Image (cartoon, rainbow, N blue to C red):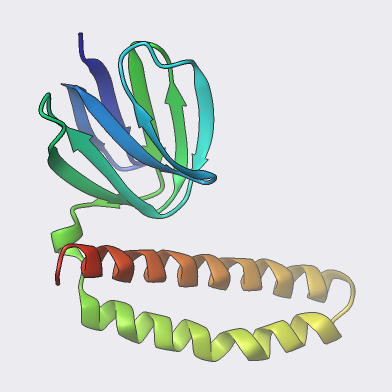
Length: 149
């Protein structure tokens, strides 16, 4: 008896299929879902969702940029911020993005430390967004390394 697996982004339904097992990048570590799994909800970190067949072989990998997962004994639903096949990732674009983000982080951290009131809140929110972009770009580069690209 397979697990019903769905992966959804704000734009579209990416996958909706029965699977033997799925491994999801939870914020506290990867977790596997098999039929009869205990119910729970988890936030996701950037990484790959791996879909397995009956022989425990990965049949499909999908990069997710974060989101939520809900697991029941019969189903695993992933609500992802973004989702794409790892082959769609562009190393040069990711390297450039990471260089830009990491170049801006020190100055922004200093500004947050010196600001007060609403300026500090605004700068702290921008810092949080930039750190998130850094984490996603690093995760995408890691996936490229794992698939040998």
